[in-house]
Length: 253
Ligand code: MN
Image (cartoon, rainbow, N blue to C red; front, side):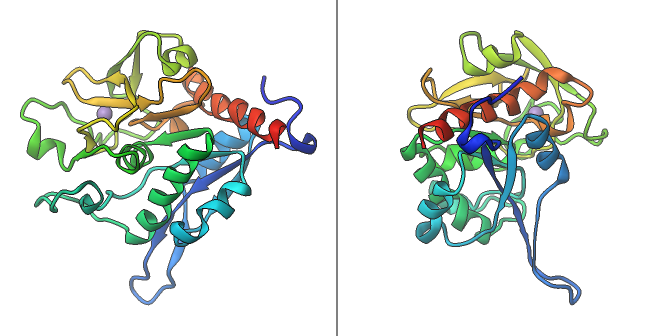
């Protein structure tokens, strides 16, 4: 299966970014992440560790020293200021707390050669941190787009994506076309320098990017494999790929 011989015989440590939920209605501020990410990493043989939204400029190095790989999870929109854009009318909620951790953390992770799996917002923040940009609202900006924010259950796949042959993603999934779920109203616009597209939706939107370097594992997808893999086992390969790459890191440590 995965990850034999990792650090001290322990599972590779996978850091998960999480949401910051400001207090509303008198409750406390909270950090929270969907349980599906935690279970997907654990099922793939990793040890999930949740990373709070500290100031990334100050703490990225220490966070990276504490993990062997990163899972950038889904969440709210990235502030368009980070890619030099003004907020469009249909920009959704943003999280200055998450941006402040994740953007410096992703830059440091790329520099350090840390394995990264990026899901939904994770893919978007990966692209922005590496110098790319986003479509702020698909329905408002892409005339013939299909429905990318499904109202079907999270485990239900609603549109196909074409996997680009020769990519790490195609190596993991071993298929030219897969059916995916879709919970995004934004998408990658300008691909970050050094990255390549690994998946397309039928309306021509980017559904994934990765670093085209066989020595690296930096893979982002716009869909949510963490709520698909229990019914469609091939998607478990994404988490296993991350954990396997993280095991290499932990062996070198
Ligand atoms: Mn989609």
